[in-house]
Image (cartoon, rainbow, N blue to C red; front, side, top):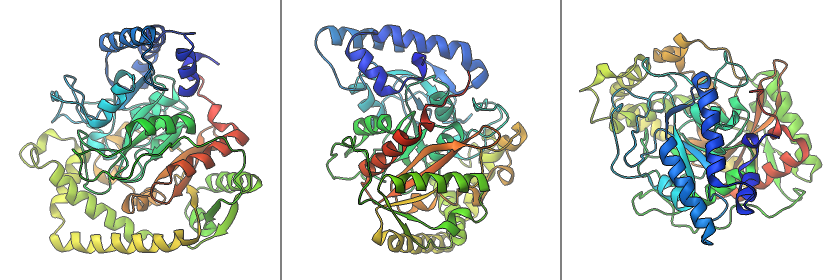
Length: 464
């Protein structure tokens, strides 16, 4: 396997054993970005000089016996919602095209402390909603240039899948880590709400935004989460719970793990190839010792409408400095979304919040006798798209039924892991979502690791 498709864990071993220098690895990655990303368009900003300077420093520290851990010298990239001191952070918007933060987001600070080499900032849909601003380019799916890359962390999914970074960061308000992971055939982890600080990250909502990793295997997701997780005094929503060792100990079975499944929920209005791949994945997990438990999921239709009202209203708050004063500088999709948010009344918001509370309660009942819930990540495989569809208006880009398997877990903040589980007849990635109780990331990753050991879907890469 060529080095750019190796896992973070594999490359970390090469760095630690000095089989490759941080400068050599960073140069290789910058060259690959230079040769491929004019087509794939995953990067909003590439940082060659800063990356090479960081790589030289990382090598120097290794020479002096200063090893910062598994992420030392690893070239990564982050969604361009994350503040980076002295580097433009555009959030996919024209409004913030020239914004240069004077400080780093907490997740950036923690990555730097771990020795990460920041290759650059990644493209995304405008401010995290499905559509893109017409002045910005749309990331291209490396499996098929004509199909969806997921939203909104699309650049993160593409860069990870295409071997343009060994791991990336994304954000997720209704599936925006999990959708790009599913579309691009990589691993995406939405951590427990409050497990990772959102300080210095452009937000949409107060209680549904999450920051998490996209990687090429579950162990890599664990390594990144281990670094970025933990309480942050600058983000009052972060949890006080200590961060235990997230990377699970090697186990090759799932004896005693109760995995819930609602076959009607996962199959209704879902592509049959996706349903089939998920049921096949569950058979693999059962063979490894897991107990499959039949559960009954609530009807989520009303809850998805509540998500739109909550998110729409809270997005107005997130953009109060520039909307409506700079309304015309937004693209048609996000401008429509803001206009919609402005119509949500206090009563609308309160009713939606009531639905959210009801949904959380029903999900609590679902999880009462299980450790993990299994669903698809998406209702359909990566689907054909056009630039017209992706640039808006919002009625063309937002399909509430598409977030059936994802948004409800932004309501309750439970951790959710999307992992590859096959390919459809067209050769496009299919994915399995595993959802756990709060702070159960280690168990989710354990289940994912065992599945990877049995199937090897995660080692399939696009031919680029």
